[in-house]
Length: 167
Image (cartoon, rainbow, N blue to C red):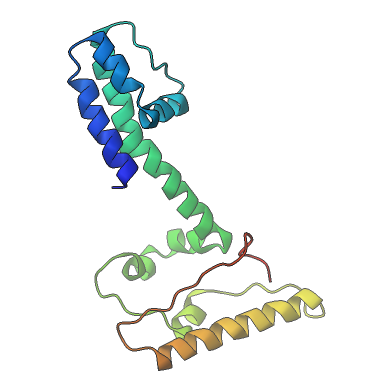
């Protein structure tokens, strides 16, 4: 849980335990809680103390469900970029090991070739040459990683520009 979520959860408990309307309003005026309420389209000015449970429920739902849904949506968008999400849905058993902690094996060039089909543009295109060079580079990189890294080390990829799909 992030530090922000921890603080929001702490504020959530204070909201539930508020004994006066002023105390409830004070807890709802916390910057993090105000941001959550603004995102939800809710007012930070309760009319009665009995609203503390309602505020508690919507804030807790945001912390536990809505805020993580955004991250999952972003993950799904990223997986969809190269049709990985479609492959995951079509072949869930083949991908199970990649997304679980059981029997983790490093990804190798042979596995990548077996799992993914490359859809190139037409043969005479300049883009095709760039695509082929990118694929060769990726295969070479994976093979280099397989032969040079100790078993416990894992390669990492860092994008240095805002559009990681450029070739």
